[in-house]
Length: 391
Image 1 (spheres, rainbow, N blue to C red):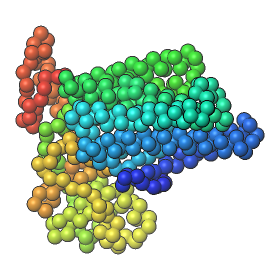
Image 2 (tube, rainbow, N blue to C red):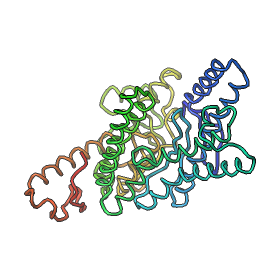
Image 3 (tube, helix red, strand yellow):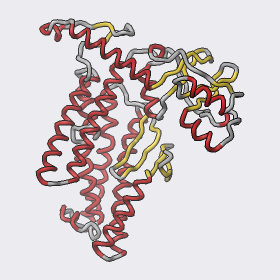
């Protein structure tokens, strides 16, 4: 959140503005002023944009509060020029929970649109879509139609929109999670290609941007599903590193530099009597060297709020936490003592090995028996379904 400005919180969920959002507001103000040469019109246009993003916040709160009902916390909500992002701690494994969380946002936009329509009917305002051609004169009508468009757009069956998650949840009622995600991702990529072709034929840069946004989002979801498929049912101990360098609270930044240059480790647990009291990451070390003397104790600059995990913890859940917290390394603790490190690099290596073994096992099954293949053993000993691996 270093590049975002905290503007408040709702129900304990922090609301942030990314710095690029401020550029958007300034650009909208300049656009309306140049077009109308009127300060009032510029302020009116900027006000409409701010109103839209209030609706975006409410949309994301729809996701966040629905997720809370299912025991899934939300870390924060951040506004970007292209929309909002609610950072959930994890995606629930139950398909119907994901379904209700996904539709929670668009449902808010529908409620807002109906509420504004009711106000316009009572006050005699226009409900015609032509209001969008003069948003400064018909702010409520414009906001109503914008919410309607947001609801419809978000329900398109394509990642990363909510409709893609709804489709995945419905497919997951009958298929395994990875297969459901891959199918939903394929649908989304097909829509992205269609948007791109229409954008090229009409030379519409907005459609081209949406096409790229949807295509990349589908790829990311497919990748995340592959990670989840190969880590589900696997304990952390299967992927943790057991040979690594550590530092003590009495070590200095100079000692940390020696450890960094002497091996391939990038992050160093800081120990006191064998107990983890912090984690010194390479980025923190480099920054500390420019701000402190080399004789500064590492305990003063290490991250004391790093979370730890146990060797028996489910790898897929810890992996989701690592992504949610943007944490590349997690100390693994057993009985209060450090026994390993879990890194995103090692999780990736485990997935590559598992994928290669899956591919080899498939190559040994006759083509006409693939659909009837029984449950097989994964390298960790846990049974997995006979669905093909996600490419």
